Amino acid sequence: MTMERATKECSIRIDFSLEPGIVRVETGIGFLDHLLSALAFHAGLGFQLDCKGDLYVDDHHSAEDSCILLGKALRAALGDGSGRARFGYAYAPLDEALARAVVDLSGRPYAVLDLGLKRPMIGSLASENAEHALRSLATAAGITLHVDLLRGDNDHHRAEAAFKAVALALRQALAPSSVYGSGAPSTKGSVDPDGGLSRPEASA
Image 1 (cartoon, rainbow, N blue to C red):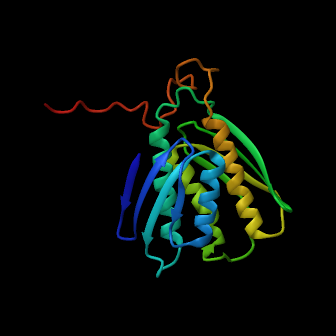
Image 2 (image 1 turned 120 degrees about the vertical axis):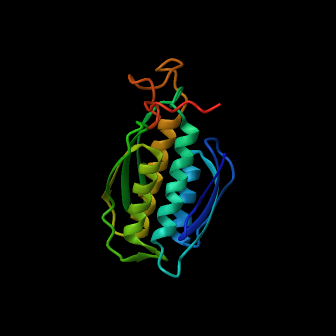
């Protein structure tokens, strides 16, 4: 699946698959590339993402819009969630840091995040934008996401552990499951955020 997002601030393209595949991320923000590559690899996803953004302003728009497009691709690929486990949780350590992530492919976008980062920057990524990237991903994907850093001193380790925990939780939530039969894993009949909307008939 290929999707694009173009604004006055960023031009982004993603080739996305729910199956493991090539992982390549080029946003112009080295540490963000590192985090998103780790997320893709450990979640068992395949995607190639290219972003040309207004880095002369700062890193905010590129980080935000890249994760918005990634979230939209995930949402589109997920559909109504049929055959998926839906819920996932995971812990991920990185040396002294330990992160916990819980995800629900619910169709309801919500994020509660506490990474506790202290440095203003990690490489060329503002620390606040590491958290903002995850929030943008959750909102665009229509998922509920909780992430807590349980311990850790090094901000690189803390942020990377958080993204790896999210990846592992996503991998669990996206796993094939027969628990709900052949239907969507919801009493509503869909976890598609737009699943309950009536759509106008196409004109003849």
